[in-house]
Image: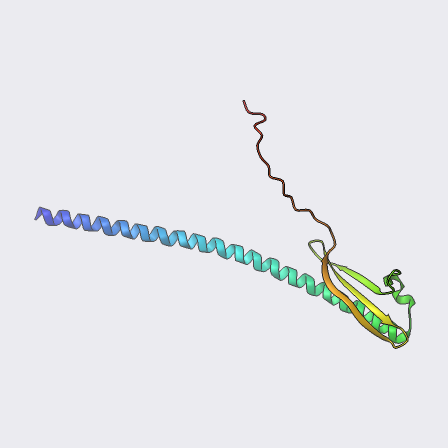
Length: 144
């Protein structure tokens, strides 16, 4: 009878180890999933902010287009004088956005026919940026 008790104890121990291993695996996977969910949430918030910023700038670009259309109908060149590009003869505005970007709206106006042509409606980087490619390597200076 003593041998049966020893076998039972051995069986209970091995099943407990398997259960502990399974619980540790589940906890590990749940922590990894939680971290991934937080990163995905942060990415979706940044993406939503970026899209919202683009549509805000797009609405201002549409307002510029409407202003140009009204000036064409009235024949009022003076109202668009600040937007005139003297070198190209086009009318242009830049709407600032986040992260150093801007929406450029460039129009070619035909005052005789009272029509316009959109030459450019694009997002570009206003600020030049440089990628830091330096690698900080410890030279051993200051070591005893």
